[in-house]
Image 1 (cartoon, rainbow, N blue to C red):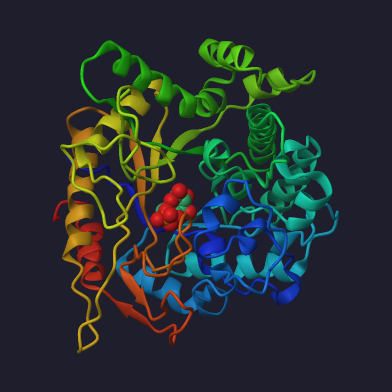
Image 2 (cartoon, rainbow, N blue to C red; image 1 turned 90 degrees about the vertical axis):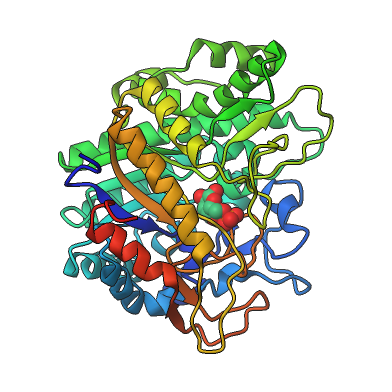
Length: 473
Ligand code: BGP
């Protein structure tokens, strides 16, 4: 038993966190470029502080990333050495359409990703492509207001059509939007939205979400039309919410909290807004404008598989005034039964199994875990090696939980791409020292370093896991 024979082992990265080359070969500026390092980052990514360009007093880590733009061949070779069956990466929209609303794509941008895909295939690695991993051309934000504007659907459609046509035969697995529910938690990073004073923020977020959902259904439709072999998935930030105890109010709140996130996925998988969601949006005065034809489009173009990121569970205590737990931009009460990472994210492998089961029970579609990992500070030993046993332990426990979900619970899981196989810039904090990789990159928080890649201890470990199809952990 154990993992299915065809199980897709690999890892994931995102363009804006590793590529760099922010102004090379015609690439346009994007929201993810102007998210600075430091204290104000949180305000910027949440749309509370307008930052539409680079300001001299800030540093912007995405400009350089880990310079994968110039290192991708070397990096993919290392992924191949680990035995990846799949590599999840994302497209930087503004490399393909620098402003976003052009009709003709930038050939240099298209050629760059084509070269990446060919490189992957050279080693027998299947690319899994996230069409939008948080990025949005800045021009679309300045001119149209980002995803709050319905016109975005058309621009995104153009992007998708271009990608599906150009990469037919090279890419089969697509994700429409990374962590679509992040619109609620980080609207500038997730959907290019900045709020003006006095606006109904909730209404704007749900309107933007509706636009993304329509765009996602449209992408699914076009992907299937262009190539019947295309498999399209939704992607959300998962992690079940626990009631702090059996107090019914806590149980109820936990359910409501999870529903907030499931709302988007319910639409993408089941093809319609759930009743609780419609009631919520009505009650909270944030019902989106739904145009004629939208509901049919949503109903007729549901996804082929369900993917999600899992880092931690959450915990709800209605009596606890202060929210002290942290984790992937979600607020949470502190769970006294769990240890936390150095960044305060709880570590909960059984929670992973719980989440896998809950998602599968709800949707009964093939699942694909596309992010999971431990952000930690790594210490380079004098001989240049890195003993990241903490990372190995984290992955071992989570892979075991995944195995149980498959073997004991019958969850249909087709693949696992852990997060950040090669150290990259942290999305939430903009730091380099929050490292997830099996491969170390010599670059510090100040942007200094040689960019040299070094294998960590976990590199050989993950290689063994893949080679034995998860039998040797
Ligand atoms: C998810 C994002 C990723 C990634 C990850 C880890 O929300 O999809 O882009 O960064 O979280 O988060 P962080 O980088 O903040 O540690």
